[in-house]
Length: 176
Image (cartoon, rainbow, N blue to C red; front, side, top):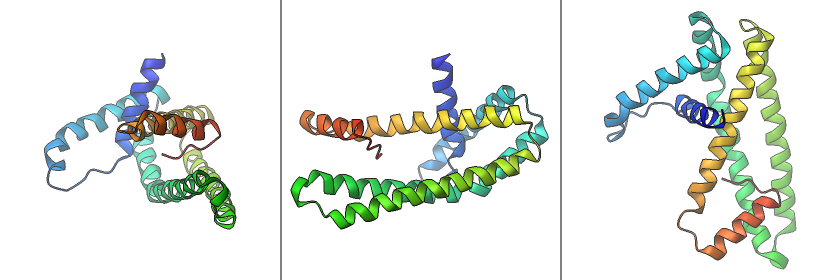
């Protein structure tokens, strides 16, 4: 079951990525399109959704995609700034850390707002059970993507740097 969830999360990650129209991305376009089709099938089967519901889910996803991407970027930037200051120990700029913490709180508020609006949109055509399953799939995706980013971030770091990064994460820093 865990393996299936991981594969589904990866599939959803690729489904949420826009197709690039740049040089070398053209070579992978058929593979990406095939993967996106597979994602649609898995989500449809998991939710028991009709073709029309899947079309509308895609519309809702596209509606909020840019907003989510912007929020993720703001979150990442704030966490990186906090991490940089924390690593300076006694030289840390307390005001900057305070501003970045406030930014993180605001990003979380905005994420909650996006989630609420998305749920209202989905409620127009999905049952409450389907919405709950879909929200679970999305959360699973976010966690798996975070784990993949963390692993990628650790690649190339010296052992001491990896330990320090893991220590920061245990303290609650989930910067990707």
